Picture 1 (cartoon, rainbow, N blue to C red):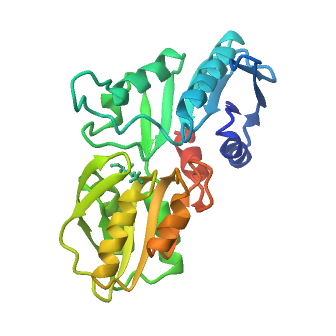
Picture 2 (picture 1 turned 45 degrees about the horizontal axis):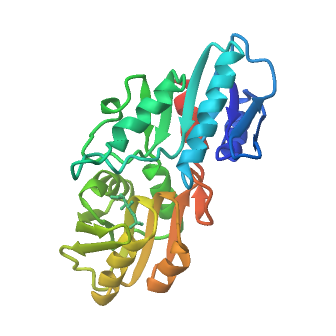
Amino acid sequence: MIITYGSAGEDLAKSISKITGQTLAKTSCRRFPDGEQYVKITGELSGEDVAIVQSFGLNPDQLFMEYALIADAARGSGCGSVTAIVPYLAYTRQDRRFQSGEALSAKLFPRLIEDAGTDRVITVDMHLHRFKEIGQVFRIPAVNLSAMPLLAEYYGKRRSSRNALVIGPDKESEQWAESVAEKLSTDYTILEKERLGDRDVEVSGDLCVKGRSVVLVDDIISTGKTLMEVISRLKAEGASRIDALVTHALLVENALPKLKRAGLSELIATDTVANPAAKVSVSPLITEALKK
Ligand code: R5P
């Protein structure tokens, strides 16, 4: 297999190629003066299976177009198959037409990836909520890996989880909170979240955390408002320390300093999206999946 990448996948592609010993084919991406994108893969791809590493965090529209051009370039070079390695799959949270006139992006985006010429997909901690399995949105073979055990392992090596409580901010976070609590051999609880706007959430639920250290668990931090809301409640209830384990740290609008100011001790995130809290790499996870 040849590994290549888009501009949001270069570091992971290099790391996967290093671990597996598979050839890395460089892709150059640039823009024409009018804003259209141009890509070129270097190397011989004829008859080869090609894996394209491209994350869709921060500016997903541009990154998707780049992916589609790379997939077409690989196809045009006569490759055998195209595997999309998508550490962060965007557009998954709109998984229902909440109001009439809305698009169902969680279903449309996978179709666009398929139509770009993809044969199979590997992703990490896809936001599964109303869709329960990745196979409900992709018609091609697709694997959803979880980085939560790796995040929990990292945390467990550094801090004692005795007396720790794992908390997920909303219903869909139960899958990730449960996995982290199991790995840390501790208990977990799930709160209720009501989203009032893009940057406005309300969180409710039982918070008996006096004197306990809390490990918040979620798949995505975007503006950080969800976790900020939980943190302020936890502080008021007397939590002794608050850390967060998150797979996709998009951290828009200066979310990390805001979270720290709100009282977060440490954010432990993965490298599915480039971010300053990326302490755990998903490359070993992806490498294992590629072998299968
Ligand atoms: C949605 O339910 C996700 O799991 C996250 O909780 C959400 O995307 C976080 O967004 P924000 O950081 O903007 O509150």
